[in-house]
Length: 312
Image 1 (spheres, rainbow, N blue to C red):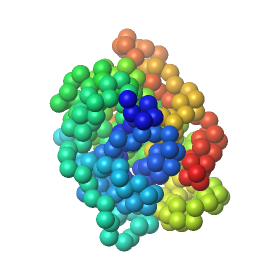
Image 2 (image 1 turned 120 degrees about the vertical axis):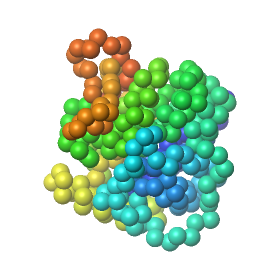
Image 3 (image 1 turned 60 degrees about the vertical axis):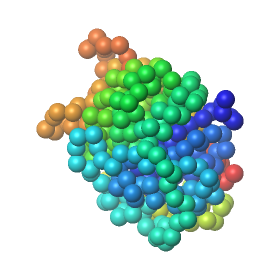
Image 4 (image 1 turned 180 degrees about the horizontal axis):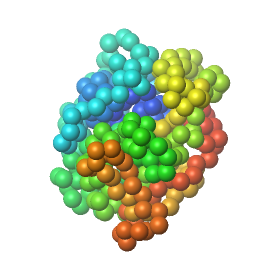
């Protein structure tokens, strides 16, 4: 049994909002973080791994293992998001390259399988990146869905518009084949935290000003500057969405979201709609539901949880 009975692995491609998700997971002190796995996504695998180590040092948690995973999508070319996250993935907020924490030995998909076997029925995976590592883990261990307590993934959009193409959210667009493997793997509890709810969880400068730790406040302010500017350009609101932190929030306080079970799939062979997450709201396909889709969120309560955790 884990210390808290609430053991997690966080899987990240550490850009700006993944870093905020890591801060929330660590500072909440309610999650037994077995390790953080990294994958190519917003930035390269090496950059995501370095960024993760930097954030863990910043938050005083260098003992948490970091295990690198897939260096690219299953079949596609990598698609980095430097326009959104900056060249370093953290909006230039931690420019000092010197970091004493190093990644641990191992390969992320193997680590996921090993920990699932060590903690059967206890482990929750929180995925805030393209789902490549989990897809590879499923290829190695098809019985993985029977070993995990829950998978919570930030990805997709089922009612609104995309954030990388008109129809697709970035994580499902970056590796739609991986997302499809995960959706069809047969998980008992697979929770999708998509743009439909994350776009309601906004962090603005006033909220950042409420952070009491000057080191964390300065980091959050600096790292989100480019993020807020980009969000304002695209959406006309001077704030940024807490996409990845909300996935951690769902693990911490499930009552924050309203979930409903649907059959969900991902488009992998379309000229215009590659990476689009398709939710069968009216059961027109006659398939068994495979995903708990987050349809509502108490955005105000989540923002309070986020700020209180970082202030703890």
